[in-house]
Length: 223
Picture 1 (cartoon, rainbow, N blue to C red):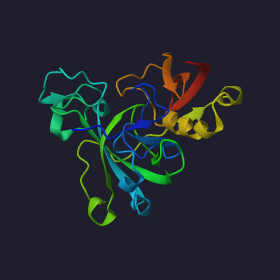
Picture 2: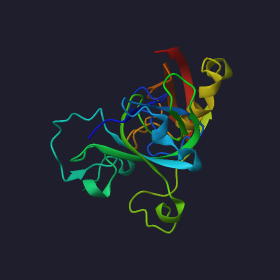
Picture 3: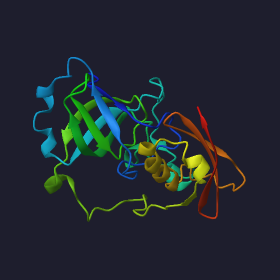
């Protein structure tokens, strides 16, 4: 398979990336095509779609990682096993990810044109993309579908982000960071209220702790 593009996102490490696409809707990501796929003709008509499917590679998973028929989903606290094909674990026979993102605009004027501007991605900065397909609501949406062990509700934390710290984050990135923090970046099996966590976001190290469903930002420093 050929890598057709890479994504530019604010997520500089796996920790803190939303667990599914479409949860942090204020994020903005740029999809930069690789040559020879950097052709305006290749995206002709794509602006007619609201959402896109991205097929991409879990580039941080070691290629020699052995196959395991079961994995420990973080949503279950890391204590229960499920079949790998019943999960979205990155540790798969083929390290392929699938995300649905909103297409915000198509940039046809930058030196890297065409560039797709999307939102709601759950991809690490630099993630290789192997295909892009339109999302078709008449066939791709199934609201009545069973969700298995994945609780359809998402727990949202309140975020205490002192203004003197939040102002260090560029305006265009601030709301996306608030949303990512509210989604609770911690692994499900970690709940120590005294523990301080660090999350890399848009070139900043965000340090925080969580107690009683409130996330409190302690410091913001350049990474």
